[in-house]
Image 1 (tube, rainbow, N blue to C red):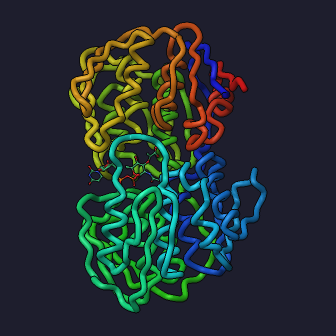
Image 2 (cartoon, protein in one colour):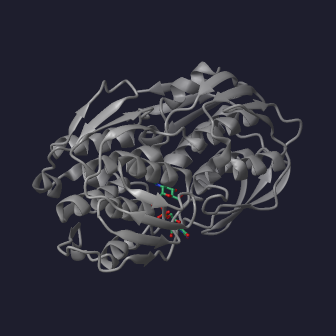
Image 3 (spheres, rainbow, N blue to C red):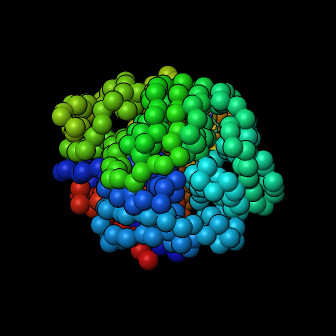
Amino acid sequence: MAHFEIQGGVKLHGEISISGAKNAALPMLCAALLTSEKCVFRNVPRIGDVATLLEIFHEIGVEISGDPDSQIVEVQAKEVDLEKLKTCEKVRKLRASLLVLGPLLSRFGRVEIFQPGGCILGARPNFIHLDGLKTLGAELLREDEKIALKFEGKKLANRRILLSEASVTGTENLAIFLAGKGEESEIYFAAAEPHVRATLQMLQKMGADIEGIGTHCLKIKGNKKLKGGTFDIPPDGLLVGTYAIASTLTGGELLIRNVDHKELFSFYGALKRVGGRFDMEDRALRVYPANKLSAIPKLQTAIFPGFSTDLQSPFGVLLTQCEGDSVVFETLFENRLTYLQELKKMGAKVEILNAHQAKITGPVKLQGTEIQSWDLRAGAAMVLAGLVAEGTTKVTNVDYIDRGYERFPENLEKLGARIKRIK
Ligand code: EPU
């Protein structure tokens, strides 16, 4: 299996343009299953999770065109082979395969898939998705190693649905389902993450009427004849954060282009608080070397607009270089502090207080060694640690990283990092 080898200690320099967001691309591609018309997507990231989803689409008879290397992908779901979907093993590889439930149930009235897998970050229950669909009138036929649903009613059983958590993919799945129904409904405690907003804007463009985008209360008037069209995947704010941390960690200077600042305020706030220096330019972020990095009393993750859980592990690496004691409080997931065990192997001073909290004391000169990726974001964090460590760092399990970071080692190399993908 491939791994990355990094010689640390090089300052990053140069420019990088940010690719499309994984967490917008996945639900938006699934929304294309609502219609038999063609949907053209621009700025599609070339990452493992998108490739897997498109392979699933291909297996179930959805037409996919566009050069696999270009960032344009055309999807046309004239027909969908629901029988093939039932036995499609690739669904197991990707938690986001849950997102086919909403569109297919909405359009065909039935759907069956294997239970999806993906990164193991904690309980990550499906209940928001399944309870939500049941509340709207779907019947859950099975939920063992497979999930099967049918929706036979002509009308929604309820027009108001209250989520018990502001689940990102839960909101997307339900909104996609409702967009294909010709009735008016409301979702309360909807997620407001930027990728949810992008998905809702796509549904609007397809012909659904949606009010409250970007808030926790959505009003959706669906449309049984949704159209195709051309849709832009927004830039990935998580990549902006990752590269900004990489720059600050190595004392380098980067110009990061294709940035939507509005989704990054809580990240910028934390970066500023530890002493990071940067300028918000027009759709770009310029990062300068910090004069001094200082600990933060609490880095607490939260739903949007709070500090994203997906940037917690990369930021944790930065905290090893900040003077004093920092406390990380991961409020969302139960298993998202495991990367700290790897950092300890590199010499980081870390005390895991419980499943959600850890104390990181810095600054510590990290030492290169062999470390593994525990999940996608933890994997990116390992690469960042390697960039600042003394000597050689070998990062294993890099498939995780390739699932969500387009050409990560190749892009870092262009910025001056000494990093190699070893096959
Ligand atoms: N949660 C709360 N309170 C809330 C909402 C969520 O405690 O109000 C907890 C849940 O219990 C769960 C976790 O937060 O343990 C995440 O829940 P959610 O259902 O929102 O997650 P998801 O939809 O399965 C998406 C992203 C994840 C990202 C989370 C949180 C996609 C495809 N996945 O997952 O992305 O971490 O939202 O923002 O959009 C990643 O990209 O590496 C990744 C794991």
